Image (cartoon, rainbow, N blue to C red; front, side, top):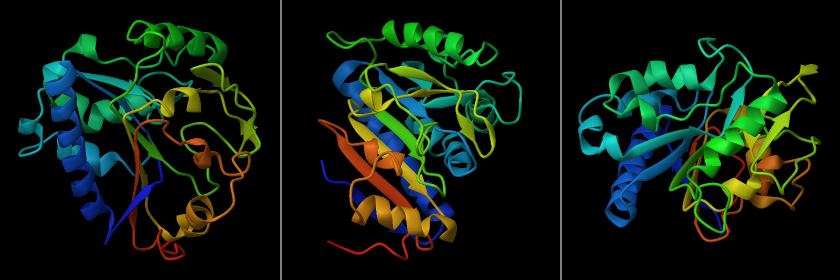
Length: 246
């Protein structure tokens, strides 16, 4: 499905739009299937979204006991490390809403990357929908790096697209990545994928991803193409300055 693009004035406006979409996705999933499966992203961009969802009126519009929370990627660091995506989401959102502890499914990031990936693959399998060996997520939240990466799928880094979860140990920013990431195999079965990208530093790569030729090895965010779902880019004016309408 062709990506949809929404351009917002700034991160605050974008986050409010994302919060409303999160609420709508949760309500639709719970009405249709009795639960809402979402995969969160890390980094600074989604933090305002999480903070909005943690407070009225947004918090009160979600049936938190039917929400199951997963992560699209994770750093293999202690689970209380400030760089840990689960820890960030806990501080901004999960500690402030009545989601049952058993509905929160973090990566065991204190394991070595290969072990953590294998462990998380089993976690996903427990929520799988045959014939898949992983869940079909109702909503996946993703970001985009200045280099075009998403989750922990980095430029020129091999991706085993037959596995739902991979260990990422290649060098990134001149040091071993030591991460775990879901793969396009999982992301592309989602019912809805929302990318969030803000700032002028994203403008060049964002235009290449949306308007340029298909070069997924160089621009991993291009790998995300849901087979039977919606993909939406929420971007601010600075990030969107090079996008051309088609």
